[in-house]
Amino acid sequence: MRIWKLLTILLLISFFPLTPIFGQRVEKISVSHDKNYYKIFITFDGKPHFKIFKDPKRDLITLKLSNTYRFNKEYYSVRVVGERNLITIFVRNPRLSTAKAKVIRKYRTLVVLIPFKHRKFFKYTVVIDPGHGGKDSGATYFGVKEKDINFAVALKLYKLLREDGRFKVYLTRKGDYFVSLAQRQKFTAQVGADLFISIHSNANPYKPYKRGVEFYVLSDKGKYRKFIDLATHPSRALYFLDDDMVRDSTVRKKVLKTTLEFTQEEGEEFAKIARRYWCKYLGRFIPCGGIYKRSFAVLKVPGVPTVLVEIGYMTNRRELNLLTNPRYQWSIAKTLYRAILDYFNLKMWKN
Picture (tube, rainbow, N blue to C red):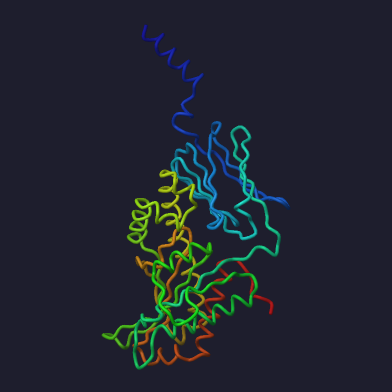
């Protein structure tokens, strides 16, 4: 009798496989392209059932389905991240139109088709954040205000990127006025930034001999706090995600987790590139410091690589003289400009 029961169970399993109950496992991911579309092929071990969410402003495509394990695949134009019940595609090539993307199912394979934009419509979006401003002067030493140094360097970097022609560039403030940290976050998300750079000047009155540039990226603690805040307050998450994603609580939480990890990892990647260029071009003037993780508010923008740069110490007279020198400010701007080109795999502008 027991043998017959066992045979019956095995027979049922053969006719009704467990895959639909426990989810489809991703077997293979590949990419290709032709003159019209960039194509992502995701092959499962069973017929997938999915729902698509798109966030064109932040270049996100999310597929909600039954997916049983985590993965992270990096390609030249896209990054494909798998979570339980979710696959998120970060579109990193501005030539691709996320808004017009579509998904075709061919039995066990989902084909994500992302059309190419017309050449004149694609540019990388960079947000430059001059720290402090208005009533918030930042550090003030020897009659010099930090907000003025930050703005002078940011404006020079802004001009370099604007003249390049391959970037859409924004400043979080265009003059000497106060902008809150929350407003800077929301503005960065609103314009759909591909990179966020906050420029500050350091100070340590207890160690006036201290020198060097320092780079800051999002910490694990900051990432966790931002996730909890947005996951439990959908109205706040609307500033950072598409409406449909926010309404679906499962999608909201998983996409927030994935996008904050992306912010941290890519921010650290840019910081490494920027530090390398600083050591090469400016290290003999202001020494190369390290890369540190902090939970600064301006770094907490889901889906956007964020970096805060402390370009030197105002409490060190030698460095302060350099930071207030327009010629040296141009050198800082050019060094960061080179790092941005390297990060986006672009060559130096021919003009």
